[in-house]
Amino acid sequence: MIGKRLHDLRVARGLSLRGLAEIAGVSPTLLSQVEREVTEPSLTTLRSLSAVFGESMSALFADPGAPSVWHSRPGERTTLMGPKGGVSYERLTRGNGQMEVLRAVFAPGQFSAEDGLRHPSLECVYVIKGTLTAEIAGAVYHVAAGESITFDAQQSHRYRNAGNEDAEVIVSITPPVP
Image 1 (tube, rainbow, N blue to C red):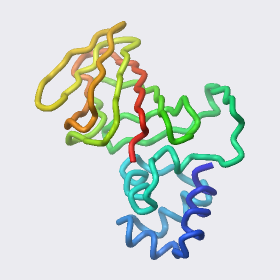
Image 2 (cartoon, rainbow, N blue to C red; image 1 turned 90 degrees about the horizontal axis):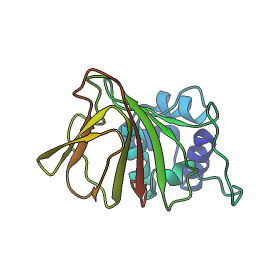
Image 3 (cartoon, helix red, strand yellow; image 1 turned 45 degrees about the vertical axis):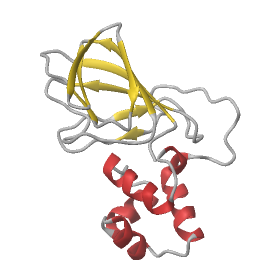
C-alpha cells in the first residue's frame, strides 16, 4: 500500500525518484524498492518523506477508497521499522489522518529513538506486559503493565526497555506524526 501511495504522491508533484531522494535525503534505490514494495521504509525515512509531501506519516498509508470500517488482523498489518537497535511498530489503525494506534514489543535494551522526538500531537502509551521507561522532557517514568502515560508530544520524548523481559505496548497518537 505505501509503495503505490508514495508513487502517486511523487508523480502528482512531478518529482523523479532521484529528485525526491535528494530532497528527502535518502537513496533513489531505496525509494524504488519502497515503491515496488520490495522493502518497507524506516520511521526515519517515513518522517523525511512526510515532511517533503507536507503530509502526516499516516497519510502516506491512506487509501482514498478505504472502507469506513477497517478490521485489523495479525499478519495483515503494516510494520513501521525503527532505527537500527530500535523497536518496530505494528500499525493497528488504517491511515486516515486523524489517529494512529501502534503495537510494539520492546526487547530488553530496545528503544524508540536514539534521541528524543517532538511532534505536535497528544500521545498515550499503555503497557500490556513488562515495564517501559518513558523519558519525557528530561524526566524519567517507569510505566508498568496495566499503566499508561499520556503527554503533549511536543515535549522531547523517547521510550526504552531497561528491564530484563519484553515490554509490550500500545501507542496512540492524535493527530498522527507529521
